[in-house]
Image 1 (cartoon, rainbow, N blue to C red):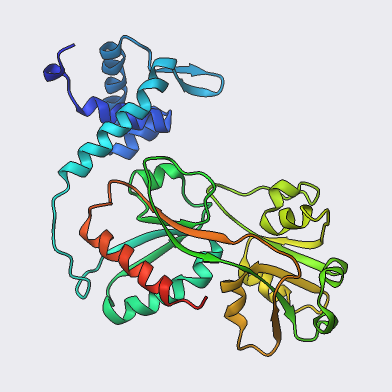
Image 2 (tube, rainbow, N blue to C red; image 1 turned 180 degrees about the horizontal axis):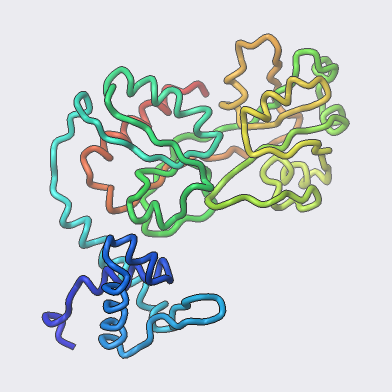
Length: 313
């Protein structure tokens, strides 16, 4: 096969087709007609002497050859786009750029307010578009559709760039009228009703099972190591909801300390250290290699870290 005779646009077609697994959706993403994409698929089948996508009862499914090609083609295109991006100066004071950020509720509550305040001061015309983990996929980040994702991640694609924003401990948030405040130990903690709050990673969440400790997260795993279990009354994915529920005299919200400290000056709340050890969590920001050398993105990443370093520990 002589590469000089290959239409390199076909590699772009192949990359999008293997991600979307749908000719119409792939055509829409590339802003071409459906017949043009169908013709592209026909040419790809001829080029690789392989069906590439096969129609099944579950929709279009990539062949084994196509699956093996997918990471190779993706790597080639990412490196090519990165190489073609020219350097340009970035003037934040006059920029009208929109930065699209996927931020967990925890990150949005603790980091974004300070970031917005800083932007209002030095870059008043820049806009933030904050999305939730349910709004985007890893593919969106990898393709550069989302400038940055800020969350706690267990596993990440190797192609992503990443940087730790901070590490955080846990605190218990209680109503100032909660009778347990006067004698807060492990026994009193376990005797109370609790608010569970968490939302990590990407995708639409599912219902929680109080018996599935491994999926309950850091707090419950720490208790399980002590052969203990808390009585969860409410499950929520929203930190502000969890904090408001902690105003109930019978409920305790155990959550990252930076979130709890949002109420440090509110006399209605009491913040206390958990009566058992909970491992720290790490908040990270991740971004596509396509944006790694972009001048505006470099500036924005530095700004995020500057704001993070100013947040109260």
